Length: 236
Image (cartoon, rainbow, N blue to C red; front, side, top):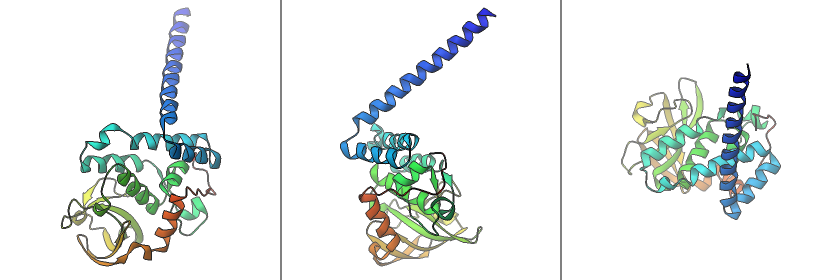
């Protein structure tokens, strides 16, 4: 019996030690962040909770991985798609009490979920922050025929004429757009431009992205670190 207790105590002590070491590494990283990032963490903790702040710190850890500078674009796409598709899918009405709300990546990660626009926006900003050029990315508004509803996905163009790769929270496997026959493209945009979509791989420039009110509102809130509090707590 004493032997069993000793083993239990040993494993308990080991787990405590591992947890302590991981916590020290985690908070050591948080201390190394720049002042702007630290300000964001403080805002998140104040607006939501310490758990939410830890989630955002983990996102910063992902952003600042050293190999982000050396890995190729496709690897970056997969890492970001896998990371952010872990979040909870939930409607704006349930989470924010609004018919349509485009959450910033900080809000999405801190509150632990969002709808299709929020997944797509978070992936877009994350990829931009780890070095993907804006001219290779487009947020695409589509009609998801299987669900019979409108939906948003992120597209990556290796070149201007390339068939784009689609990052989605419904079909979590990255696929070329011509393999996503369940999606009918409507329009797309990035930081600069707005396009009317003709086919999965073809589009026509329709002007500046500033024509989209929701996009302008999101970018302003993100730049000014404005954080809204949801009406539902998803475990943040």
